[in-house]
Image 1: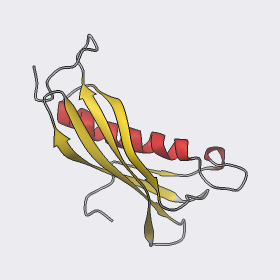
Image 2: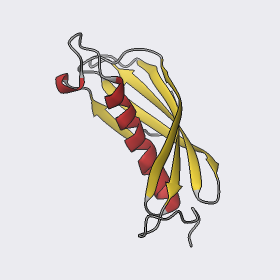
Image 3: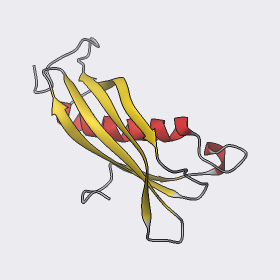
Image 4: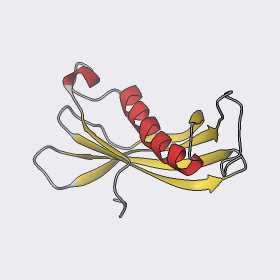
Length: 123
């Protein structure tokens, strides 16, 4: 598990699961996108939008009641874009053991009020 604080942390609920009690992959990817988006917005000091998601790997299932923590770190910064590596971990409700469940890379572009790309470092 990363040494940093999570970008976002939530508890998986029944509405987020299929009939077998496994959390939908789309729900988990949305959570990861939100966590990466928080990191991107802080770095861009403004709005940043998702333009790509690559290398998604589902390592283990997430169950109803699990606490899900998303960790996100900037891997690369270009003129207008950022690549953010994101990992999601699960922790059973009554346990201290955390397990990596999903990894992905998200690419964000900093945009201005006109929705056009702008430099990440201002401008």
